[in-house]
Structure formats: structure tokens, C-alpha cells
Picture 1 (tube, rainbow over the protein chains, first blue to last red):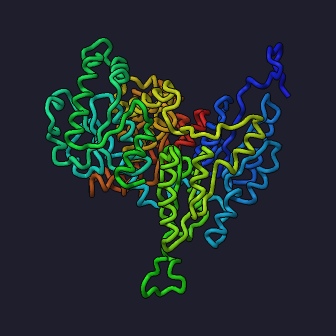
Picture 2 (cartoon, rainbow over the protein chains, first blue to last red; picture 1 turned 90 degrees about the horizontal axis):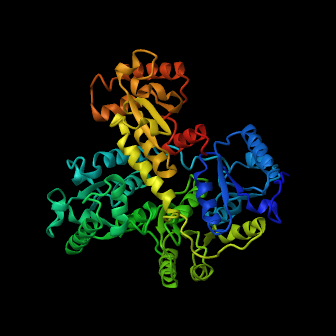
Length: 282
Length: 282
């Protein structure tokens, strides 16, 4: 065990981050998502996360074991999360001295009972190409999102599942990309410029598409801060201008009965989930 | 129970999809990722997935219970996956007649033992805004990716963590967006046009950035198919042209010792994982 020199604490290892490994046959995305959902329950502890993906063979598993056993000799005991479904490969991983939380076997038996059939117990790529047509649609959604980002092109707004409306820099683009990439939603977004905000009518390019519109709002403080990074000390980024644009946008959304979400309080994932709920796609 | 009329099968409900619910305090992303990693182990069964996100209160939980109990009266018994960490809210959910696979409590006790401390047992947003500075960096990565997509602007290639190189339509953009959005990586991408492919030198805009380059290749058949959708029956999409471009690109990557990944065999998630491994960021 490595012990720090002249450590002021009684337990010298208590300050070191806890190494966390996500070991998987494929990308490790599921193991990481689920592991993180558990780790957030321990806000007082600092974790150092590392994925060990693409464990396809016994040799790969042995390599993982040597990484995990080396971590066991470090200042803090590591924690290993795994989704390895292949019984042989998991058995090799189990030879590690590190404690392993196994997301698959702990639930697969119960699922087999519920579904009345045996699970494969083999590596299956949960994040592989999968169905090529579904995958292609997802890629097309990304393409569409880029072509219709920030009012770039309005040619095919009619193809949009949803059109995000907001004043400049409210956070339309990341949510657009997330919905396209993760949910194959065809998303366009349109920036409400000050001229669009003088009245209560929808701007011409989206005027006939009201029911597909979704508004994004934020706080004047946050908007001013984000705009200042782009154009410091400009009218555009002044708190007065930001306040005016947000107030007018909110009025417009209310008048047009367009649902809204606030990007200052919600992450891209949360906003996307709200929008998907609205679309009936959760 | 709903029974289909004149069903030809002995067990009329066997053909109906199994309803799957992901119930969560926040977005449900973790529950869905982990649930899907289990469901892929049952390739013979069709599942109909639905998220029930934002279960914040006892009232929300009661609403979820009524959805789940209604599903219990359908043709197939539903399966519920949950990550609800709040003990009170989970207790309400547990009143449903539907079988629940609980990802949190089944592992939290073990984690508490391993970490020597109590978990919060409260709702924590695993996909919320979290640390604002880290979140902002992620948003900046998306902005950077859009500005430096497809050779749009080459101004700030020097800021890139990685520059994806490939002939047109090999799938640079979705991988670029995924790495930016999910991993805050600053990714530029540069399209290798035929003029870039005549020799073995890197194109001028990336010539001094060789060590940050990563190549994407695909099969001529796949490339021709994707290009045909954009420009049918053109030289650009002919199998001859695609074969030539891919062969020359491969030679260039080999000559310059640029690592590559093949987009015809790998999903965006898998390619991104390979690239993150190369960057030492997994």
C-alpha cells in the first residue's frame, strides 16, 4: 500500500479519490450511467472514474484484472461496476481482488423469471449499430439538426418534429443536437431576433408551424453572462437588452400557447426529456 | 385482461410487446441505459419502452403507480426499472402490482459498506446541471464542434483536442457532436476532398496538427450508398470514386501514422469510445 509522507490526516488515504472502473464488453456507457446514478448518492466522496471498454476475450478480461489489482494496491480501494454478460468472461473478471458490483447477473435471473425465458448470457452490443435503418434515421436527424441550426436554412422546417424558438444564446443548439443524436428527433431551431419580438405574432418562417414550436427561456443574468463572453460590453449583452428580449419572448410564447422550458435551471438532458414528454415520445 | 379475438396462437398474449417502464426522479436516462443493457439479453422478445421521468413527489409516484397498474391489466405483464433513491417515494412506487427491478437499493447497501459511509437516500439529479463550470465547458464544446464542422471554419483548429479526417460522408459529424456533447471534447472535423488525396501529405490546415488527427474510414459500398442519397448517379457517389477516395485516405493515414476507425462497423458511441481511449480520456 502506498502511504503518503507527512500526511496531516489520521487516515492518510481518506483524501485520495476513490478509483471507479466501469468494465464492459462494449462501450461501457450503460455501466457508467448506472454507476454514476449510484455514486451521486455519496456527495462527500471524490471519485476518479475510468472506463475499461471492449472486453471481448479472456485475454482482455485478464488485462482488466491486472489494472484492477494494481488499483487495489493504491491509496483507496477501487470500486468496479460491470455489465459483462458473458459468463466465461465475467468469471475471469471475478478473479480480481477488487470488489465488483455486477449490474447484469444481479438482475438477469429475476428478468428471466418474469419473462419466462432464458437470457443469452453473451456479449450483446447495447450501443452498437443495431438496426441499420434506425441507426441511419438517427444520423439523418443529426444532419437535419445541423442544417437547420440557428435559422441557417429554413427550407425544410415542415419536416421538423419540433422547432425550438428562443432569443440568441439561450441554449437552443445543444438541446437540438441532443434530441437529434440521442432520440432521432428532427429538430430545427430559430433565433428570435429583436425584430421578431416587437409584436405577438410568430415570425414568418414558423408562422404556420405553431404546434411544433417549443420555447426556451433563461434568466436575464445568465443570458447577459453568456452573451458577454461573445460580445463583451455591448448593447446585445446588456442586462437591459436581455431582460427586454426574454420578457417579450415569454409574452409571445404565452400569446401563442407555446410550451417553454428554462435553460438556466435545467440541463440539456432535462430539457430534452421535457420536450420528449411534450411530443409523447418518452 | 384484454384477450385478442380469433387469436391463432395458443397463448394470445405471447405476440404482444412487453411494456417496459423506466421510472425515475430525474430524466430516467440511467434507468433506461441499464434497463436496455439487460433487455438486449432477450433478443426474442419485443419490448415497448416508456420513460416516466420527474417523479419528485408522493403525488407523482401515485400517478406512476396508476400507469403501471393499468399496464398490469394489459395483454402482457409489464416490467418496471427504477432508479428512485428517495425511500419515501420508492415506498409509494412499491405499492404498484407491477414487478419492479430496483437498480438503486439493490446496490446501495453494498456501496455503503465498501465506502464506509451512508448514502443520501434522496433524489439527486444524475443528469442535472451539476457543476456549472463543467456544464459550460460542455456547451462550449458543442459550439466549437458546430463552428468547426466539415471544414466550416479552420480558424481555431489549434484549440481542438482531436481533428477527425475523412472523405465526405464517412460519418464525421455525428461522432464529432457525440464527443462534444457527451464528453466535452473539443472536436473539429476536416473533409478530405479528392485534391487532398493525391499525395501522402496532410492538407495544409491540419499539417502541423498531425498528432491530434484521427481518421474515419468506411466501406466503398456503404459510402456509395450514403452519397447516392445526396447525389444519385453522380461520379461523386460511384463505387469507383468511393473506392479510390477510401484507398487513398487509408494510404495517407498509414503514411502519417494517424489512427483510424471504421464507421461501417461501429456506432457513434463505439467510435467515440475508441477515440476517447486514444486520447486517454476513458
